[in-house]
Length: 182
Image (tube, rainbow, N blue to C red; front, top):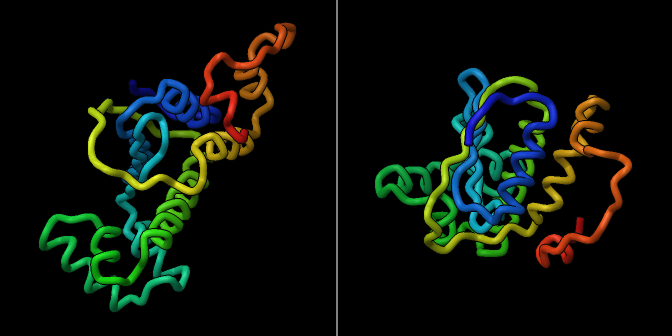
């Protein structure tokens, strides 16, 4: 799955991945900027960016949750051993599992708030086999999709996404969607 970004595209992509319970990485590109989201069974499990000041560690320092010296020490291990930052921060006891879950949720939220307003660029979704243990975000993917929809300002995009306004609304037959807090 790939294409061009425009207003309303990101919410639709998130919905398709979520409802389809897909595994993979959604990469959004605008100019030199690259933002990626990993999904497991349709749920966002982490985010990556090539913009240094928007990375997880830098976000933790910016929010006062991690000292710059601790980030530098952890980054050295990440680079040397090819490990994930969160794993290293937990191992160094700089953050506990609960704090790491909060941090990843904040990071995903910040990144999505930015890309929700992108009106240009491109996207690709690459399917992946399910594997490995991932964090479960405290912020639901359904809630993130609602935030994405609320960022759409063009009424024509909203009307198109809603479809036939004369159709009868019914409850979803999908148990995941029926119990979602959206």
